Length: 434
Image 1: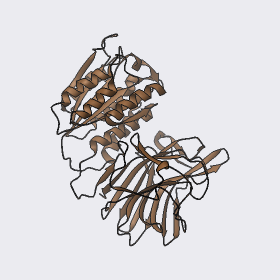
Image 2: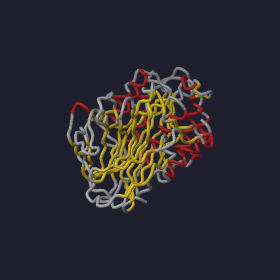
Image 3: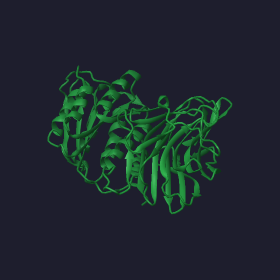
Image 4: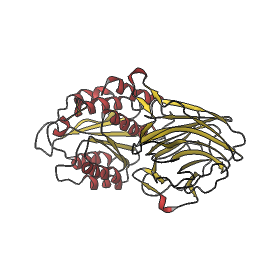
């Protein structure tokens, strides 16, 4: 993990998130795995060194009023399941409170995840009216005969407002299932990080939870992270096919199938429409993961008046030999007449040493893309990002008489019998335009 990567985290946290008034205190409880397995190496560096560097950057860039507690385990004694230490009790996020102790950690011993969560739980017991975001970073599973899933579930049952998020760093499939259980039981999310870059992205996503404000009633702000197994009451599903969608793992999953609303068509199943008024001017953002495999697989967010009047910002695929050509697009339709803007270059990026984005890839290549649609007056601007930090504008559309339009999420194979693929929406957020 380079200093440049850590700096990128800071830039996104400061510039990429809406700054809104906070309604209640926010506490961040970081639990860092410093057990013996964290001495392993990835991309030429020790895993513990990558973790310390990224997490110090994360803690330093939290909102100024956030309070921080840091716990580590497995860093002092080899075979001691009681080797759990509070490096910094809950207090100001001032780096001098925890930076030196985090840097001094040396991976040594066991992995007592359950006991570490219990220690956090004792602190939560006296804070029922405060927001508590727990961040567990681990590269393995419980090794001290505890049941961390049960402990995480108990934390939620105490009545405290808590989310237990887990970043699994370089873990195997079986280990991942155990760590996912902790996040599910704790009302949070699991983030997989197989590389330093993915660790950075996971840290960014977790930090969004902390930076996310509690909007005042009527402020026009809305965010859905698709927690649990039920769709929120604000959503309406048009032409529902119950066998082709689900809420699970902190995502809204829509399985593509034949159908669309393009031009004269009106056979698209599972059109998710948010039954809430949008602000006069706004920014809509979503994170989408999908594997585009066959002709006209696509997934998109929409500003939807009806099937003949809408704007559609999404990701589209077309086979090209053994590969698939993927392209971000921004389309509008007025009275059945479409107008499509597509992102032109096959590759973007590459400047300042950043990796290039190549939109040609294998048919089994998964992609994650962030989509952002901004409205100002009658002008709508579509943009995308492949890392949540560097945004690329697709173009502008003008649309009049869109009063009463709603936000929508959709996925399809258009009018072809292509492969059914899952479009996974991680979150959707609406905020007034700054």
